[in-house]
Image 1 (cartoon, rainbow, N blue to C red):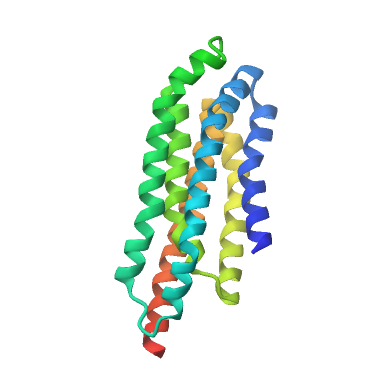
Image 2: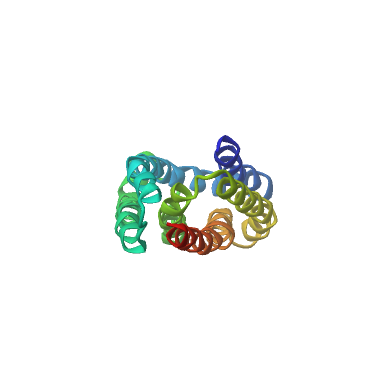
Length: 197
């Protein structure tokens, strides 16, 4: 579990390094300002997700784990991530004018940070559901694939579109290499548990 958390943090933090190498200081400043709004929103989302963990553990231990119960529990981080993304987007321009009026946000930069937050909100319930040793190994492979794919995509998009590039690459890689495989695997896993009870 520690390796998964560490690898994911390294993969997503590599965006700053890539942007610093491939772009100018202005783009780096834009990224840093947008990250000031994204980071607290991600912390709130993570704290809310941790509160769901005991309920997901009970779901796994139940004699008849239900897809419907999981869907209800999954709505919390998904809904919260959408609200946080919209809140961060709405706050971006007033915060920008107060903190650093000479560095301009763009709507697409805050939008891609919001997209990344929403994708992480969708991914969170699946990562909390898949906690058995075999499932954790599967998660580790997903995170490793995401990290490996994220670096070249971040470089290419950073050169092409500046500050939004690495964030868009991260959102794309989390979606392709974590959300989709983990959603499919968790459906199989929950169905398999239901068949054995």
